[in-house]
Length: 228
Length: 228
Image (cartoon, rainbow over all chains, first blue to last red):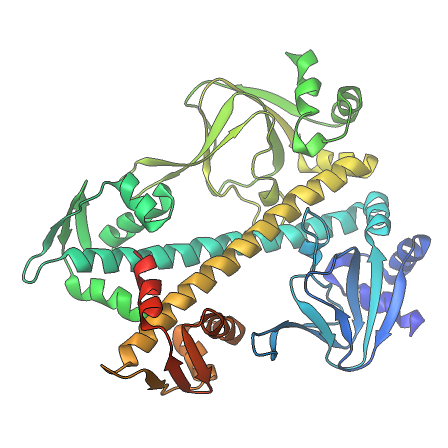
């Protein structure tokens, strides 16, 4: 097994573009651990400090959360040769976001933070790989957050306007200005403005300050139907 | 000004715990730039590649987005000695997420990615600081995303159950199982389960498979009112 480890690690995103020989040289120079887990073993619990970079060498682990009724809910499967939660190793709240359980027999290589810093300083490629992995994660979350909050604000605004719209009318005078509206919805002004602009772009409404002219009431209703 | 730069940088989160003398030694060893912008100058545009770490040395910049009507909407103000978008420097999509404009006379120190990697390799403290900064960002976004999607799913479920609830009744038999429901709402099963568990914990309802017993209809209604 040991001889194959560096071959496997060379396929891991952390060690991308580095030869198995070079990886062996780097990893064995500093402190590291290899641990084996049987199927069903708990590897770590949500909230435990994350002090080592763990890389799956063999098998698959699952990230789980326990629901209110004590039932385990699977969040994510991570197979060899992927690392576990690399974006949770540094930072002020470096704790595992989920429970991690072995789905089958699992071998993990663990590199303590201090050894990892040594490896980063000895090899710019590993450092770049790691920075790319966690930056990708941040950028993915940032996009997703933008998309979700945008969708949710759109639904709120549609609901609000429809609730103010009198039967047979197609004009609404908003009782609040944009600043008050954003506070009312608990969102930032830029997000609110962006949603109004999008509704106008989609030809659903036209707005001028507080005055809203509905151009397509069916489409406005549809936004709420997408909700369910 | 030049003599004061390293004093200012020593207060930046990037150079935390490093003396001005040491910072000067590190930064001047590699390629870097100092640029001055007048009030209102555009420093970079949303979507431009982010290839240098920019740190505000003097003044304040604002992150802006342009709305549909061509109006600039302010997203964030960044003052000396903070870095600009450090989590967007590495990764596959290393582009600025917003336009950056000088709010007053601004001096920026820019360190190209390659120089930054050199600095990281020569000083473990700077490396740790940078990893902490971008990991904090990821963890913040991850928590926020969890919270927002949770809140939005809760509203959807409340809306859905209330729409099925017949007048005078307090029991609903859901026409879909949890798997079908999660597909219907476009959310993951773990998130759905967590929301149902929370509703039970708050004594709003009790559930057993598809059967829902409403224990507090007013509170269920309130979830939708929070929406506006």
